[in-house]
Length: 288
Ligand SMILES: [Fe+2]
Image (cartoon, rainbow, N blue to C red; front, side):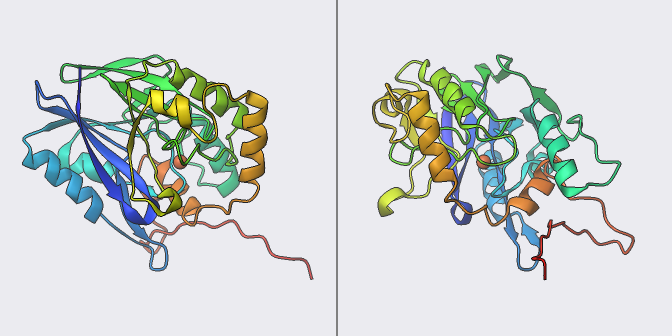
């Protein structure tokens, strides 16, 4: 039950995507693939995702799943692009419906925008199991950063999305709509119940202290050394730290483009009457 895990780094967003492969059956899943996006021109490109598709094809893998840990706010998802290239069911947590409802309000999305998650092939709930070839996989709901956040336990590897980062980098922010530091604390306690040798693969790494980018640690290392929430950290201390820190953080540069794209399952909004596609930006202007 030891999957082969190959990381792919998207440098400009600090995101790690993964190909998780079953050595026995050569079946695979892709976790959190990224679409390149230039907000100045509005152009998206699939250079990074093509590297993943080439890896899958080049290694004789059959892709079964494209697993999203949550609706990302810092990058556009390449899920649909990859689905077109290498197949696989696009999955996310059932909590995406709440995220869709929240952002439909915030962004005043078109009446036809569905908030029942139908843009995805599979909506997972906590505890649900599935397979990647002969590998057993289990969904662990880990909300807190967002309300729809999931971790995926595949054999001895857990893909934790934005919950814990590398031990020297701590934890994910909890100040987006639907985020909650106390909820994240409870989610991390659940992850810490996994066996210590469980391999942990993070969704982001921002090279703390100028070190090289890293993507893999273990539950034991996280329990012993996570700078925000190691074994023994109280919920009160964690939430106070998280809230104080979140108050200093700017919004991610791509939050509005990313959310509009990602809550649609990795597809663009409908074209307008001139045939072109636009993204919205909620504007606030000062009173005179
Ligand atoms: Fe995130």
